[in-house]
Length: 343
Image (cartoon, rainbow, N blue to C red):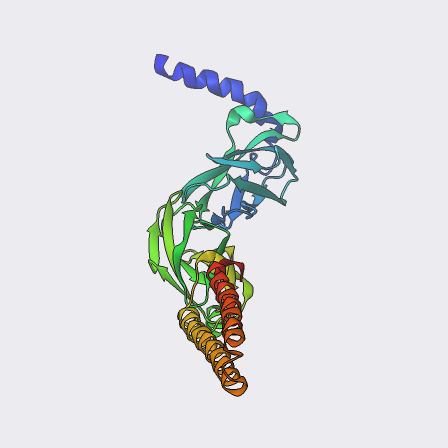
């Protein structure tokens, strides 16, 4: 008999609460259901990271009920009504909105949505513990998100030059590992302009939050024209959707020079300059020989025409001509001072 005492005491306490419903069609009750049973979240940069569960409260009793809503969802923020009044025999809809944290790790979390009757026809019945609950699975989707950065913003290439000083660093800003790659956009158009790119490696496995380096070899053909080209480089990590990121590198192309005037100041002395110098030297010597020959021949002919009395004067003319020849040779010596650097 002593063992039944607590139960009798509890029943005695509950009878006043149940008395208002003794003539009604039944005690207070509540049922809750929520759909969908699973809500997925994208958490990549720029995503809303929001998901919603749509729930219904059903009151099958004959009395109006005030129902308290309590939500648990570890790692999420959420919004839901604190309490709802459900008329007798009616169903009321409400929503629970969830928001995931930016760049959350992939995985599942179970959210519990509990509905408890606090009042029935204005009477506090919370002590009766009339409640129901629904579970919704919250899923963080995996994603990879590349960010590419070039080692430099430009490169200078002359016609026929091969350049290997360009690199790119790709960072995976996602929440999952992925096989990422780098490619040159408009590669065919660049090839038509005489520019060819090769990239290595073809791809690299990049863990979430880690980086990988890619290297470029750029080759300019012999017939490239002077140009400035903006080259787009794209990184992509495709396993969880096509997420890409682009960077730009400027190529400054210089065409092959077709000028016949060398840069003497830079020490550029072509073969034709040496050959031309030798030819000029031969021509100068030939000119000197012709001058000497003509002058001597003229004096001899003059001496023969006027006889011996004028020999002395004629030979003086020879000496005078010899002096003139010395002056001519001095002038030719001045050619030694010609500075090709002034050309």
